[in-house]
Image 1 (cartoon, helix red, strand yellow):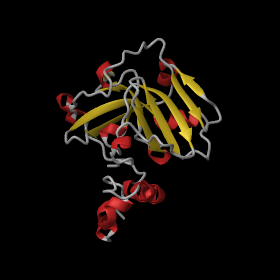
Image 2 (cartoon, one colour; image 1 turned 90 degrees about the vertical axis):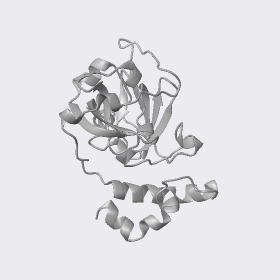
Image 3 (cartoon, helix red, strand yellow; image 1 turned 30 degrees about the horizontal axis):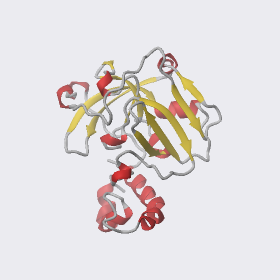
Image 4 (tube, one colour; image 1 turned 90 degrees about the horizontal axis):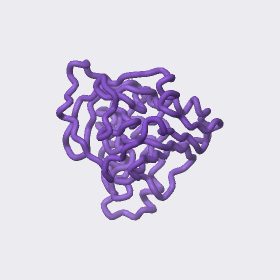
Amino acid sequence: MNRRQLLGLGLGGSSSLFLGGCALNGLSAAVGDATQPLNERIEALLQGQGKVPEFRPDKVEPAALLVNSFNGVPRLDPERYRLQVKGLVGRPLSLDLGALAALPQHTCVMRHVCVEGWAAVVAWSGVRLADVLRLAQLSPLGGYLLIDSADSYFESWDLASALHPQTLLATHMNGAPLPAANGAPVRLTAPIKLGYKQSKWVTGLRVTAQLGERRGTWEDQGYEWFAGL
């Protein structure tokens, strides 16, 4: 059953409560906390785990991808860069760019959708986030992924979305090394999430069983947490 059919059955009628598409319109935080697990299950069902249709490489729109940052553009030394993977994993990791390049590489030509109303087709290339988490021996107790960035931006994802086959830790954009302004040396990309979930300048991944008080730089200011497409 697809998203439109489910909404047609009436699930969409209570979207502010069930889908988490907007803020809770004055309802208490306790209501939001109580309904969050149901929100996630329904949104994950609507999103599905199958691959999103991709675009042909000739559909890439380089000029349409706008550059924005939370706290300026950090300049990370590629030689000293390390991606830390910690938390509920059997094998904590500290991966340099060579280690990431040694993993299977994938390209996803996807539409990057910004909550501000613009979109761009981009070809991102890198390693599947799922491959990195499996290399770290992901614990079955894990449910969420916390993501740190060099510019102090913070994000959190449900683990099912992190393991989606098109969720990448990208090191290249449109066939060239990832520019600093777009998140070099490593950024998160996925066609199943809005742009503000796709952290740039990623430095740390931490698997947890539950979400903490912080859920994301923008989510803590009222943006939707799941942010699925």
